[in-house]
Image (cartoon, rainbow, N blue to C red; front, side):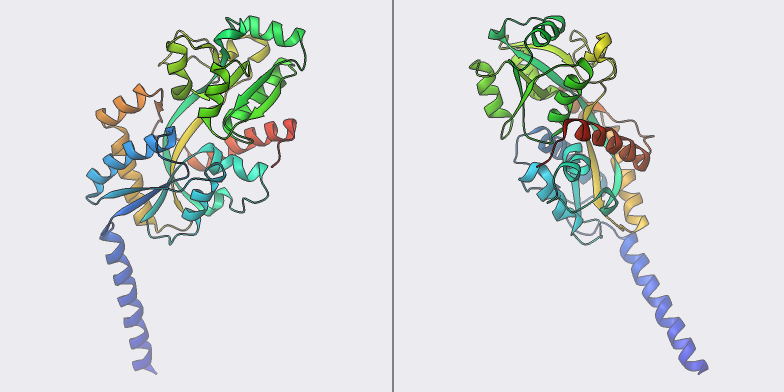
Amino acid sequence: MKTLLLRCLAAAACSAAVLASAQTAYPAKPITIVVGYPPGGSTDLMARTLGTELSTRLGVPVVIDNVGGAGGSIGAQKVVRAAPDGYTLLVGANNEIAISRLVSASVKYEIKDFTPLGLIASQPMLLVASAKSGVKNLDQFMAQVKANPGKFSYGSSGVGTGLHLAGEMVKDQGGLFLTHIPYRGVAPLVNDLLGSNIEFGVFVLSSGLPYVQNGQMVALGTTEQKRSAVTPQIPALAENPKLKGIDISTWFALMGPANLPEPVASRLKKALAESLQSPDLRKKLEASGSAIAPLSVDMPKFLAEETLKYKKIVDFAKIKE
């Protein structure tokens, strides 16, 4: 009996040593970062910029895997189902991490199915008017829409996206009657705004700003409580007394599957924190309109508060797919 007990203890000790060794050696092979969108978008840019920095700090290649579809949720689901070993991660936005499950019954995962590793950056969204609409500023926008309920429309990149929710916040707080037109991505929305087939639109700042700068669209306001440091010349929507409660952004986070071993999660959090201090990364992301996230963010609290904010908007607007 004593011999059997000693053998069991030895086996347990050996297993623990093997597990500890494997975690200490992490990473020992390339890491895949899943992006739930095609190449070229803001989330893809975020992942590729961060991936370069993580590769340097972790000493292994970081490969980007674009798995587009369903507003980013197909890619997020792939990470949820991955082995919790730190070799499959998600660079995701608020759409697929927090909003999709509130608007679509087909999205089965929840935030608890991820291991949050940290925020990367955020961008405000931008409310714009078609240059041919005649609207030159936010006051004119409010006056025209108020005087003509139901006449005007605004577009976003899809039902239940952060852009859609931002538009609904404007409608709710401004007491406005605007029709939402969902598009399959940013490109067709741009085409309709330039062709004057729709009067207003909501973009992520980095997507809409080039059209404002070349005079093809008019910036009406950004969606965070304060003006963006990247575009201090564009007012925040919240500067208007009727819209003072508007504070919503597109944020990006690094996430792993649930139950990542603590040593692995700690290594990734450290590498992320170091990457966010890189002058090269900061220069690239800030040039695209992003603000680097502070290192002190309490991720569980942040995600809970953001989800509550989105749920209120979804319930108000009765957004369902």
